[in-house]
Length: 114
Image 1 (cartoon, rainbow, N blue to C red):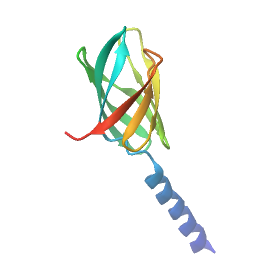
Image 2 (tube, one colour):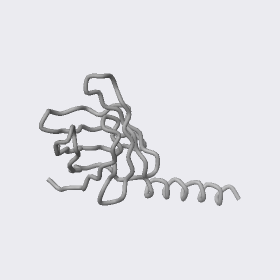
Image 3 (cartoon, helix red, strand yellow):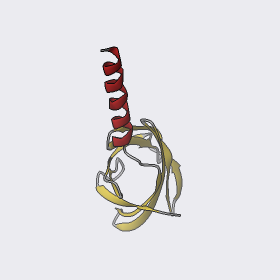
Image 4 (cartoon, rainbow, N blue to C red):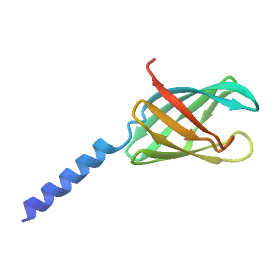
């Protein structure tokens, strides 16, 4: 009975690892910032349920802080001068959708290879 319990626990852990979002990589997309298109590049690294990385635009690079992953959902904070603000997103395999704390808009970013 003990072996069955351990086998089930191990299987559950393996399924959770497989299901967790593979956010590690580079993601590119364009947002509208003050009526002007602005290209953003996310460079993300997922380690367990922790998300780290940067977002780069023509204005420079910002480090993501307090990044978290929960299944296919993720969140992080960025500070562009007015204090940290939380953005949230969802992983869809070849794309991610981010709801920006700065603009409040939802934007899609596609995975790219560099």
